[in-house]
Length: 273
Image (cartoon, rainbow, N blue to C red; front, side):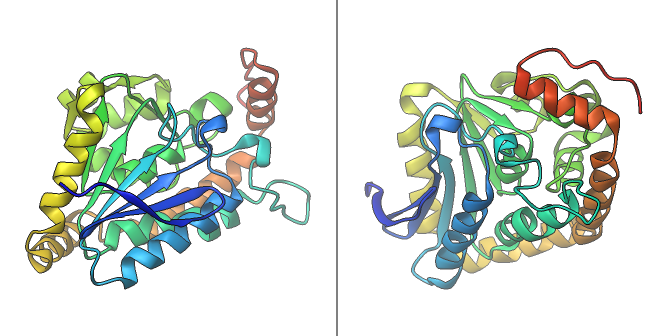
């Protein structure tokens, strides 16, 4: 099995190559790979490289450090510095410009995509993981729709990606209760494809990437088009709806309280307004 070797180093993302397989690695380990504006730019640049290279026939989405992604970087500002005329964070624009191109690009990439998840996989980071075709996790991974905990709603396509995998009842549980789903439960629910032992994770993902990279690429692409057409044809409309509702939430008192409580590391005191 070929070993992944660095090919391009961006500021917050690394691109590795091993034969016909590539790995896009989130590389902000000190922030648990929280997704900021620079990461959006770097992820899309890495996506374009794997999209345009016919020699790359399978892609892994992974991460450095002890977390896959802790979600949007609230320390970067709720909308990464984008604001509306009234001064509120422009979450709608931020989603359309910074997150959706990466998530839809990978979902529609005519090559198989594997997510390799270790540790926390939270918020929009969960959307990034689930936009892949196959999702595998380490034993210590967990999955969390944390939006409700700061007075927001699921975004990044998670309101489509999650129920497509686990159905309405469990998706509602994740969205409204905002509780962790550990790797074993996630596999049992069908949220992910499987769990590998921590000490076998890297080699197992590498072997799968090599298998797909050396497989019938056009067949994989055709299967992906069929599944996207049947399950995710309304995805663009859902992303638009998510962004619009998220912008509504940006004007709520509960959102302001949720973010402040998060930054102050205390329990939120929501008022329903």
